[in-house]
Image 1 (cartoon, one colour):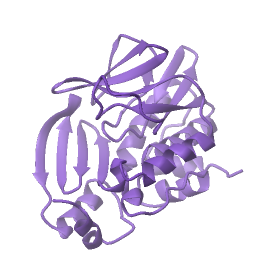
Image 2 (image 1 turned 60 degrees about the vertical axis):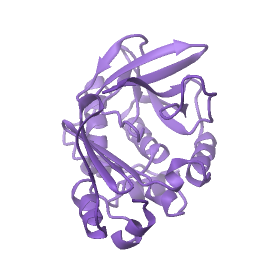
Image 3 (image 1 turned 45 degrees about the vertical axis):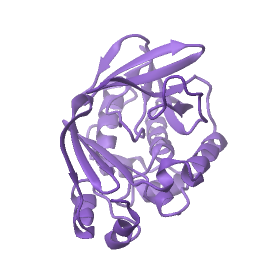
Image 4 (image 1 turned 180 degrees about the horizontal axis):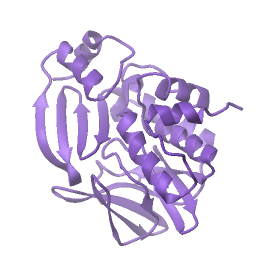
Length: 270
């Protein structure tokens, strides 16, 4: 058993209010987490192992200027919420963001959380890197739910929930899931597949994202995009040098990479 250092986590996300197991705290933590701890897949890109034990996740995401992908982000968020007193269930999802509607379901390569409150169940997810969610969502179907940075909708068919996000081009399915609880070994298997399979995007593509206030910052290889709510792009530009990449990692994402910006830059396709 590893102790969870709640005070260090709250300091890392800069949350000063006294946490309680209620919707107000859940909402505040969710927004503060995605602002302070960016989504990033540097380790799979660099061929480094992704460790999901709680001690390693705290060392990386709390004690260091690093982020992580869904299994790390939501392992950390789950531990924090449980330490506060929330009832949390880990779930597994099948990503659909880049899939055509008629394509078959893939493996469970995404982790999310169900949080049970007195007024019902909510989804918490600080780690969906294609469209980082900035607030908990009610587990309720066929209603639009607005957050500061997006509009979301849950549907249900054939025993599966599907979460969709409104984009400038219309609704887009993020992932599909059911309510079957997942255990640590399920996440370990999904993370291993995601971080080592040559067809997985993280193995060959730098993906980073951070949601802060009314802006969403996305880094895909050598391109930086800034979006407003519902995926409306306001800035998109190339990154022309390792020096510029290092500055963006530091100033926009608050990340110190495990290798130099020069070494990272040469790995990235233009």
